[in-house]
Length: 389
Image (tube, rainbow, N blue to C red):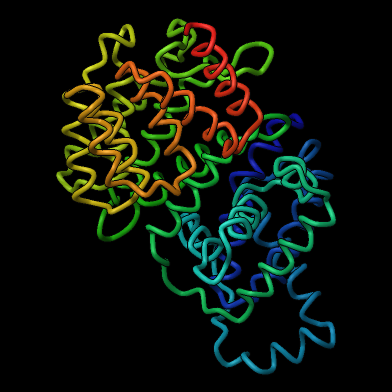
């Protein structure tokens, strides 16, 4: 077994083994350490002597490491307190515990940043150093964040799946972080959502179509990644992107996943957002975008969520379908404190030929931009409009 194959196999199996240990009653932090030590042993032995059943091998070694840890003074005290609750060790479970483990890592008591970090460590199999580089923070800072997260959920029972919506929300936040480099959080979010999709099919109540809806949404957005920025890092708006750079295979997969989810007739907000993304991806040019159908989906989405961001994006759709004045009227009902509010207002005022107001709002939007690429793009819009006066 070559090194890459070992790495891929371990990243798939590690969360399942961790899930088994914690479900058996082990403390999360201690079990996570035991799995990490078992992975180190796997790196040493698997390339030369691959096991017949890698999951059973990891579980056996991690179990031994766990027992070793429990023999320490502190672990023994904790074991004495809860020994009567611990189920006996048994044969290797074949069920995928990814959903259970994700539920634990996305515990409501954790902040979104901590939940994402713990998920990447425990479920994604990334090292603390890799996660720190992805978040652009020092490794020591990330180590402290993960330690605090593990302490927060220490003692929590792990005997049933948590709130799936909380898990999906954390994965969605992870995807939107989208840093690129050694580790792309967007890629990791898609990989984990794929795992969650597979794991959810084993649930007695059946797969939740919102899980597939989120996977479709991620795929349909991620398919445009190569066209979002110029070679020099400048932001390219959707209507100006080179659509030949879009990943058509990923779009096709996203559409297929979405259609399967919609066929279950349990509509949710991620499915609706994916439907909107699919309509954008389906347009050969920006001018051929089916805005009336997009507006219909936004109307559907507002029935499912009272998110102000949805209302902001709906104002854009209204402006495309009924004209910029109608869009501005819809925008008037949206909280102006949203970071993109001024950018949308500027766009609509420009389309309404109110250049002075457009310049005013583009300038305000640049001041509130959350990234240098976005700020540069907005400043260029100001310069463009002023040059055209």
